[in-house]
Length: 436
Ligand SMILES: [Zn+2]
Image (cartoon, rainbow, N blue to C red; front, side):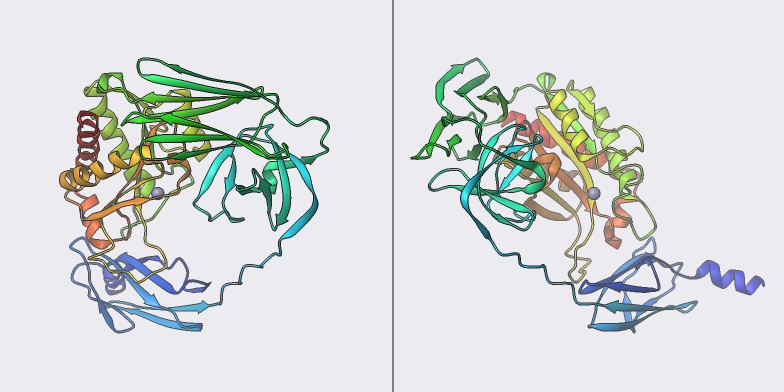
């Protein structure tokens, strides 16, 4: 009995795969877990690197059909049977052109206009407000094609639109346009008799704000070339046919800044799981709380999307930022690896994501300041299409401090100073960004 207990206590434990028998459509299966003492791990006879805390991770390329994978150490053997199935090819829906254009009205705020009929499309012209009148000239799968002008069209999800009869006999009419400059902001308005669709495009020196009047026979586009300061955010609103586009210059002093700190995941949503069983949501929160402390000390107005372990939706996180007039939004996460071979020396460290141009400079600075302070590998700055950093209302970045599943990173994020060092790196970066 004693011998049995000893051997059990020394045996490795796997976090991934979740089941011994499973079906997948991925090309790789990940084996992530913890070995004990000097237990050497062999996966299909390949000796897997084990970090000083016992963490290991390894990917196995899967063949079509059944894959028998043997995970073995001197104490234990576990056999996994993974059935690789071919993913169902997406059903290619034909484009159905309408004989005559239909009219639609958006039934909620934030209805995205994509450049292609796909949710995976990273290019979005705009997010339409509720009750915007649009012209639809085709349908494909879950999307309608929106006619904007002779040269422009986009695709909106059908779930965000209801089709209506065109009750107004006359096309909408342009009323007026106005620009007002303030000390640290400029406000641009453009009014029509109805709510029309719009788009925003950030260029190097200006922002192009367009409103489309597709019902006119020559389908007019009203363009505002809006100058922008070096560090800025912008807000768009629509009320009774009037768009208000406000460009805010970012305050120069940290005391004048509202910074929203967003600890990723929480509650039932655990995020990624590490080799030792750690949950991403807990580490995110630790870093967020350290950052809160530092930024408060520096005098910033700090708002947290969560301060304890609870579930909060992505929309609510954005609403918190908007309601508090956030200048900067920092979302904190730890990364996980996608469906590609795991290279523990390469796929590790800190990556910083931005979506809007106004956030790229901060992302670049954080790349340097976080890797320096937390001594993480530099996993670069990337464009990332994440809900919480999409609004232009603030300078927003998503920090992936390290890789949850990487054994070397797992040693790092278990060190007592890791959360504090990441937080210090972020705070240093924000100060550097303001000083530039
Ligand atoms: Zn995450």
